[in-house]
Length: 154
Image (cartoon, rainbow, N blue to C red; front, side, top):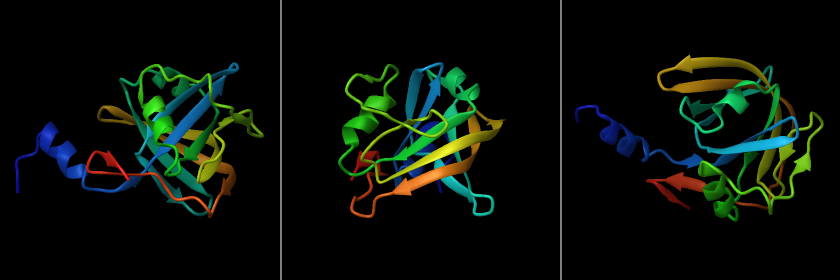
C-alpha cells in the first residue's frame, strides 16, 4: 500500500471505469453544462441519482441555484462533447438542445437522458453532492457508452 496523497489518490481512482455524463442547467434561458463522471444511482423508490461538482467549478453557482437539470449519458460517438463541456468555457453554438418538460436542456443522440429535479445539495470536502429525483427519462439501446478508464476514453 502507498501513502495517500493527491497524485496517488487520483491515479488509483483512474483505475475505476466510469461512464461520462454532461449535466446541463437552463437558468433564465442561459444553458450551462459540465462533463461529469462522478454520477451514481442513489434510489429506486423514489428514483434518484447523484453527482458531484468541485466547489471551484466555473459554473457551480448556476448549478447550485437551479431547480431542474438534465443528465445526458454520452455515447461512444460523443467524445468531443465530453471534451467541450470539460472546459471552463464550453462552446454551445453547434449543439441543438432539445427542451425537456421542465425547460431543461437535453442533448440529443445520447445513450440516455434524465430530466431531474434537484432536491438536495451536500457540501463535503472540496465538492458539492447534488441529489436529484428523476422526473422523465429515455434511453437508446442501439448506442454504446462513452467510457473513461485510466485517464483515457474508450
